[in-house]
Image 1 (cartoon, rainbow, N blue to C red):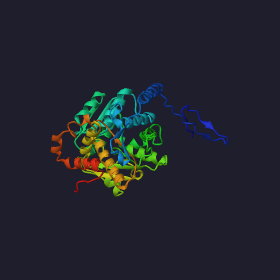
Image 2: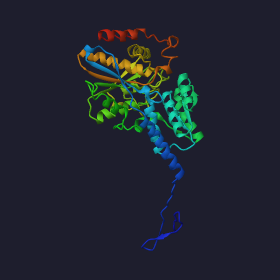
Image 3: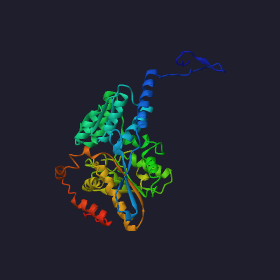
Image 4: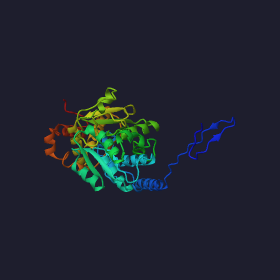
Length: 387
């Protein structure tokens, strides 16, 4: 009995028996490959058109001998750090053959990633659906729709993943799954990633190798990229990840528990998760801080007073931790630099972090934390409210 391949012709071997033919299935699609080349070109062209983001200085007393910088990711075309991630995710999915013409891209997101992914979906001409908590800020929803995306809400943030996968199955689309792929879609060895950019911009500063880089975690991809780059380039920089209330990252990292979870979503949009995400790489980072949400908001407002810029809550979380590290350096008489992130603009959160009514409704009192920051900047001492 012989087995035939695509030609249906059996082949005899030298012993006289009949061998199977080569089974050859060619799925080459000239139209798809032409579309793919054009889609990748458009995404890469977006990066080519974009100048690097600024490294801003936060004013500190000159006598301290410490420089604090904020990497201003709000200047990307879609206004946030997530523009880098969305670009990487789209290139990763396109080159893997996961995104197809006319089929929707679907993402689970608290907002900013969805804004950026809606932009790239429109750029290459595919539909986009964002699956988000119903509490996502109205401005983020407006921006998603502005870029041609559709908002699909869930009441329970833990249901975002399941609902996104179900939507992809029902529509024949692709679930991007930033929480799984963020850490692997970015080239952490360099290629103009955020870490390489920081070090290039610090090259002519008085302390070109920062003592600390502070990066908050949503997917965990940014902190993983920075930490891996630091290790790969053999820098002495340490990496700190601050975590907001209602997030499990700090507990999971502290107790080495990959199954840590939280019962509710983070009030600081864009960071903190109710589960340990696959892109969060605990072993790569050196330090974590659990930051009260009221402290994050106080730091946002302190930033505006210091440099005249409103920023989102995740920026405040990082700035609070960066300033705590600065206070430690002052107390120990150490000089050097610290870098954190300005993740997105504050105009997306005017009804939240810049609203006293929202703070009151959430039971958040930022006054003691504002006092801590004021005392630090005036005296160099860190006097935090004791719980």
